Image 1 (cartoon, rainbow, N blue to C red):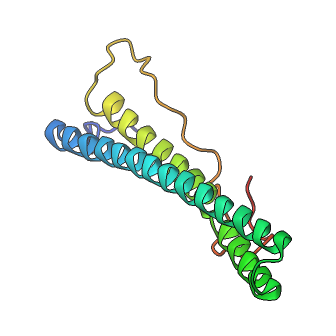
Image 2 (image 1 turned 180 degrees about the horizontal axis):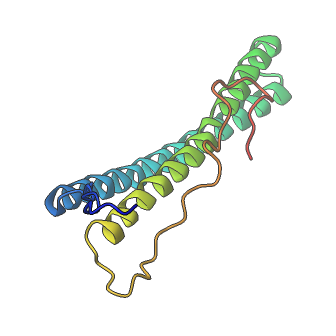
Amino acid sequence: MQTDQEPEETVSREIPLMVAAELQDHLMTATNDLERLQRLIDDAYVVLIEGFQGAAHQLGSAIDAGVGDAPSLQGTLQTLFKAVTALQFQDMATQLIHHTNKRLRNCADQIARDAMGDDPDGEAIVEQEPLKPNPVTQDEMDAGSVELF
């Protein structure tokens, strides 16, 4: 038996264009902020590693020359090496920033393609989202315990 029911109304769940545009702008601003943060971390890393390496070299030379209290200088040198190890955070931060940046760009690209219809032929390039949920499993830094890849 056939019924004369009309098809159910399709419920539109589309985001209004202005809301989508604003959301995309916020996502792109966040990616730009992450890129700026990456440059700041990279610059700080370079300055710190050069300073620590220079200080380690100077301490090593002082120890070799027999200047000062050698055990005390050796302890200072070990402390300096621990500080250099702590700079491995730069690699972890870089991985996390790159991963988050890719996720945000993927979202912004999808909004542009789906909500704004920026691509008439439907072939918009959407940056692939990262395959792994989190590239860095480390949440603390101890000498020799940092996973770099």
